[in-house]
Amino acid sequence: LRVELIKLIRRPMTWILSVILIGMTAFVYLSMIIALLAPESANVDRTSLRDQVLLPDGLFFAATIAGSLTTIMIIILAAGSVGGEFSWATVRSNLMMGATRTRFLLAKLLALEIFALAWYVMSVVVGVLGAIVTAIATNYPIGSDYLTSATFASDFGLILFHAIIVLAVWTLIATAITVITRSLAAGIGVTLAVMLLGSQVAALVAQIGSIGKWVARAFPNRALDAIRSLDAATPPSYVTSDWIWIVLNIVLWSAIFSILALRRFRKMTLVGNS
Image (cartoon, rainbow, N blue to C red):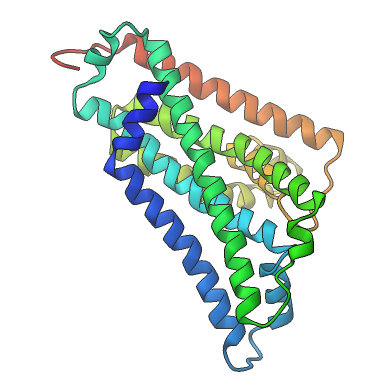
């Protein structure tokens, strides 16, 4: 695990994606400030927008932004890290150091998930700072009482728990697809397509009727989106049956991608330096 973490730290891609993540998060809040300071417009509900961006609701807004951006970044990093091992023909040399194929893949996956979580926290922190700057720029309270309260710590811990689940699954999917295809491009392209289009397709299928509703629940996006929707000022209330299909969906898809990736990697013929 330590070796994989060092690899990620030394990769230029990691730092480039980190800068992009911070920049895009900051840009969202810059856009919000501009919208709130712009001349009155019938198309902009400033009160609603301000309540959404500023604390305390602003924490959940920051979590939503962080979740979306971090997922995209970790998919790219996961495919780049795993695909790079095949492109640079370094898999065999890594295995010759004593690690089994399962252990090698697990260490890489855990290292990626650690970075995903670190990125998420970083993006949320930038978002909270953005909410404070927005409050100052628009001459509104920064929400210091909320920031120093136990409620903030509780809310932050809850969104962090949700992020661990969602990011872990997307990291696994990106890693598995890259291993199965042995292609960095396929890992990025296919996983991003599943993430960006899967939710839309599932929503369309759900409109068919009761059968469509259950078919849509088979999509991995549906369960992960359900977890993410809990990061809201007014989260949905799930009953026991909802939690059953959400947990089953996540566990089954995680198991399927894990098994496919491990079987493919174990049967893979590594020639030359790979």
